[in-house]
Amino acid sequence: MAGLVSLDLAYTWLVGTIPASMACLRNLTYLPLNHNGLTGAIPSGLGGLPLIHDRDLYYNRLIGQVPFWKEVVERLGPKLKLAGNNGLCLGSEIVGTGLVMVDVDGCISDNVAQSLARDGSA
Image 1 (cartoon, one colour):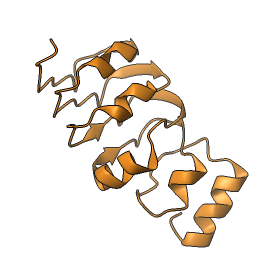
Image 2 (cartoon, helix red, strand yellow):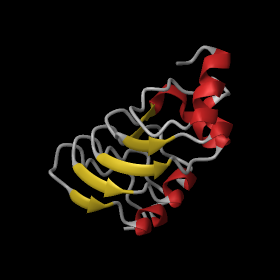
Image 3 (cartoon, helix red, strand yellow):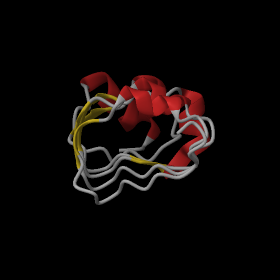
Image 4 (cartoon, one colour):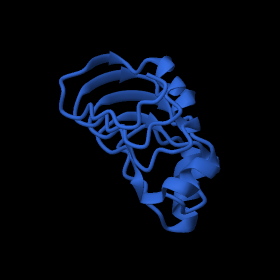
């Protein structure tokens, strides 16, 4: 499976957590996981997939801090799709930069909310 480049798992009724082993699929360019029943945290290794063009994680039940580095967020920009996951948090290193549209519905702490207010992203 190391040579796999495309894996469309959107709208497939997946439930449970995203396996951390997905980070081993280093040749993936396309991995939509949107509109499923995925729960838990986003594995940090998903941010390290170098060839992925989009991160379609929207409309699941993911929680916790988004683990992607600023460089990944800069590269993906609006192709980082997280809406519809009410328990996700964006780290302050991402939020205050204006790199992504903040459309995550929840888990915005006071310091993150202040950062949003300062740069007008909210």
